[in-house]
Image (cartoon, rainbow, N blue to C red; front, side, top):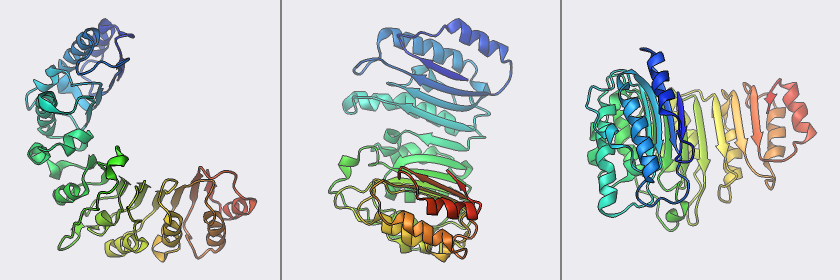
Length: 356
């Protein structure tokens, strides 16, 4: 069920009520997007606040049927959500909750979290809860250690988080059933704040083993080395990197990624690398990684670059022209690089590659 509303486009509450009644006892997957036109300051416009409360109240009346929720509010979430009691969400498996406030200081900022904390505590109490996506302020707030201690880490199979790297490494040892991890460095959304900041010095006695993790996605403004050198991922089959290095930051070392594959003894099948906004040397990193024998199990390769890059296309022509390299590759996606040379297309066709 998709719900999108604003004070200029008021949906009819009666239709929502009728739909909920007609759906009977079926589990509900809810996507809700609240639009606000113009600058409303700290508070919602009265018309939108009233509409928000009506919609939330109707949905809460069916909370026992919620299976998955994706809720985005332009300000504080409605208080009726914060009034849900633990046990109100018996079949909830997946939750994403975002509330965007322009005023992020003072008593108002603390007040925002009262209902949000209560709501997430109710979500965390669901016995079937497996998939979590917390908004960035919730994970980066000064009280995050207290806030996240009630999370059922052992239950989670999918996690989408934005937080400091050192805090990520604190919590993932408890996530032994995790199969999908999407991590965003908290400075990714505000990259200018990363300038001049040093990379956190995190050195664990031994790498963290996540035995079931299959898919790892990193979006970061710092080197990924601090994450990868502290992990062992024996089930890893898919890795995605989106990186934007700010001034003063260093590029990741190809050897760190290769050591992760060797230490994990995994068979990576899918690799996605966006270096169109990477610092100088990013292209060389990719070339070294793709030339590694550790990539021989690769089936799906996605590369996002730029028209200005010089050596990747000739490298791919040489690499794919030798059947000994990337012998299992069946899908190649190249984005944002302009027209492809005929030689690359010929090699792709000769190897029966699906070229996007």
